[in-house]
Length: 142
Image (cartoon, rainbow, N blue to C red; front, top):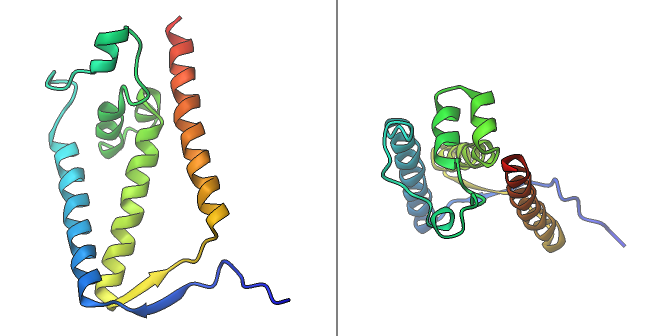
């Protein structure tokens, strides 16, 4: 029985429709990052948390705007103190930005093979991370 390695990265020719999707992804990620830098959540109160208004408790994403803003302002420890998920969000977006840009430049699609169970573990890990962050923040409130 042969076992295929998960680290065998495939590189295929990037079709035109996928190239357009990658370009759209780059534009959306850059628009998000630029708006996150330009919008200072400490000076504006445009966003209110409906969950907090309704229940009195912070939601799992409370502090995420401030966390992303501080992360992009290179204040990493302050960013983590508002919401550690901001670090993961920005890091993930930067990884996708790098991947999409590389694919467009080399005109090849980079495929990192994963198993269904590995993707399931990633989803479970991220959900547990959100839940544990939320519980920790609620615990600190009391």
